[in-house]
Length: 374
Ligand code: V47
Image (tube, rainbow, N blue to C red; front, side, top):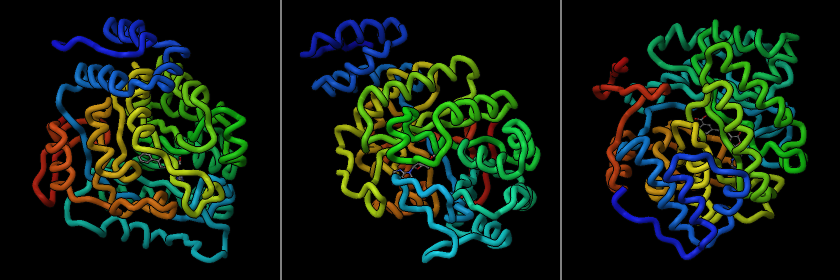
């Protein structure tokens, strides 16, 4: 770094010393990063870590979301996507329909299917295994990132299997890694308000641990901007950091800004740009053992995601054909973006676009085919 760190908040000086010395930040340090008024200083520190790890590269991928069903028994107050069975707007894809959906959309060859859905009361475990097997048969070159820890735990109960057996069967069927959803905020007080019937924080962590132990990488998320305190966010980050020390199985952390429209929490205000940017920066600084921090453009907007690339984020996620979960909750971003548009956003942020596969290996492509460089 050629520039010297500057701040008008003296509480940040010892934190800056630690960041520069590559030392771990404490719980109190992290709370200070949330509470200081000097957001530019926090961003400067996060950017220095981001550039130390990734230089000017900004990663993205070409992916498609598939949500096989929105039928869900959980009725989380945070969610606008789930429906009770046989109510207006409820849907469940037949397997043929899901496979057809996978093939439709833009002509660019996708490198990843991102598959998550509701907790359906009747669909058997075999439906999900067949879904994955059918996709692997039809699209053997595409990485399947499927099922949150919450879905894994629900399907394990329904199939009367252990978490390990459930994950192993998923892996044998063709699941290559797991997405980071369902983590929300681990603290019980918050979970009781926003997602009372979901697995608790310990179960989410234990399921992720088991996934990592059997060789499945995963992501991790945190839903912020609702009824949580700064301390709840820090507790969440620390619990993820602890598990990462143990397993090394997390690839990317994705802070998710809460979208209140059409949810049971619609009286809450939307997050502000300042909170979104600060959340990216604090995540980069606290999660010193996570390789990647994702600014999920669908959730944050293209503009905030661009700024995030200079506040600690190194990844924008993907082309994301057909996003449903945030659009049901009022997101106004497009439901997908072409590769060239993502590259333009990245270049305009002064970064160098780098197409990756789900495991962050370089992808070399033409419009209709690709090769992963291993
Ligand atoms: O777990 C649901 C969140 C998550 C709302 O792993 C909402 O690469 C905001 O996890 N407002 C699912 N958020 C999405 C997810 C994800 C997204 C992109 C990439 C990856 C990855 C994972 O969406 C849920 C929940 O936390 N969510 N409803 C809402 N109203």
